Image 1 (cartoon, rainbow, N blue to C red):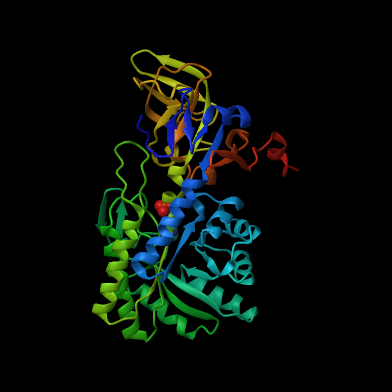
Image 2 (cartoon, protein in one colour):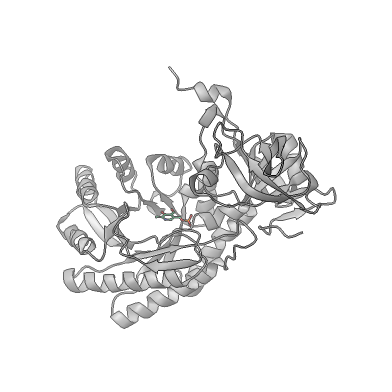
Length: 433
Ligand SMILES: Cc1ncc(COP(=O)(O)O)c(C=O)c1O
């Protein structure tokens, strides 16, 4: 049996296993809907990134897990134990990381509209780097750091003019993005030049993020070339030396059979070679490389387990299979038509000969999880698992229709561990006055 993720298999009972654990046992123990994550796979992905930087770039860099993909205290602990950094984009993600005692100097704070409170919180807790998104923020960070008598390391978010999504990438003006400073208008250079006047900011370098679910090293190499040319321009025109180059995240994973991801270390290898070659050619210092993978670390390691509550055949149209979750625990289909694969955990060894539309239970016609899922014949009570849901599912979940968020369970070495409790109805009204 071939699944989209290599940690999935069928056991002797004909049940789906994840990380060697029978999904039907997890269903019985924790109920549904349930997020299940494979810790061993997550750790192995984190190690791949760390080791690739050692192998191809003499360890002169740091991978920072993009916590927006999956942010819990347990995950922050895993990232810390594996020696990586963390990318956060809000006070809440930062708070989660600090509550897990994540080393603050390895945290990088992103966002296009960080509030004064969030910046004060971050600087007050000695966050390693703040990614400056706009001029107003540059002033604000300088002020807050000055009030606290600190000097804050900063890097600048740049729009490199490369728009890469899935299998293709295009060079665009890309001025029309809410994130960062445009290169081609000169906005980026003026912003970086200003840093010299700010006594409480220490210029460290540049950042760019070119897209998500990218399956090719070429756009990353192109981004590295553009950014290295800008590093040279900064040096020539301002005298500033760029110590760090953060090339963001975006490495693709397999959601459906047709997705064809490449090994993660290949991205690091290609980018490392490009940055070194450009530094030599341009005569600038070789910068420390930072990367921010999110999806590729956690998405393939996660599945969501549901129970089928109803099967509704509409003759000559389609057959809906409704599950006990939906857009509240996975809004990616309704947000941008994301594709997924599914398996019936209790019939995992049976041939997938029927096509169904998997729908959620929310009061929205668009509450679909999979438009055309290939499955064995589905019956009420079956256990349906949506695969590759480890990223941007739990972290994007809501309480729409006042549905409590599911629990999250980690499996490792054949054992399971509850890492986030299922929300209760009481949780839903906790803040109601
Ligand atoms: C700045 C930045 N870094 C990293 C990421 C992580 O991207 P991915 O999860 O595709 O690796 C994102 C995703 O939106 C991002 O905006």
